[in-house]
Each structure stands twice: as C-alpha cells, then as structure tokens.
Length: 70
Image (cartoon, rainbow, N blue to C red; front, side, top):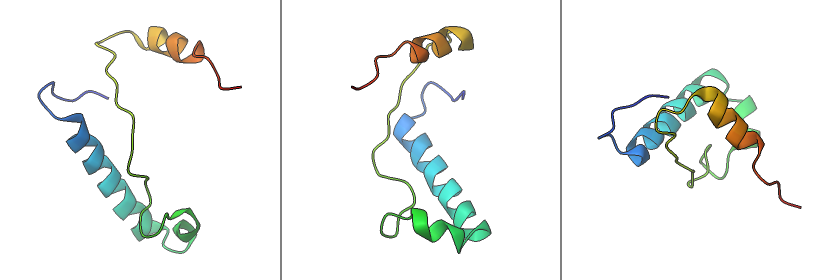
C-alpha cells in the first residue's frame, strides 16, 4: 500500500480497521458474531513496517525466509 510519508501509520491502520469493521458488520451481521472479541472485530495491536520502495519480489523473499517458531 502506498500512503504519504507524513501520514502516521497508526492513524492509517486505525482508519482501515474502523471502516472494514463497519462494512463487515453491515454486510454480514449474523456471520461476524463468531469472530468478535467482545464488541471488537480487530485486535488492538498491529505490526507496521516500511519496505522503502523495495520490489515486491524482494519483500516476498524476505518474508518467506523468516524463521518459523518451533
């Protein structure tokens, strides 16, 4: 995803989580109940990282080569 460098990642993620949760509640109100955590759909924490414009192939290779928990 591309967003302006001056935009706060926390604000962007908060907005995406809010909009997607509202849409899911509107479109699938009965189905979504089993996925709620209390009243919330998304858990509060989230990871954020920047790839600095690296090609997708390089990012994919990096992710695929990460160590897996035992």
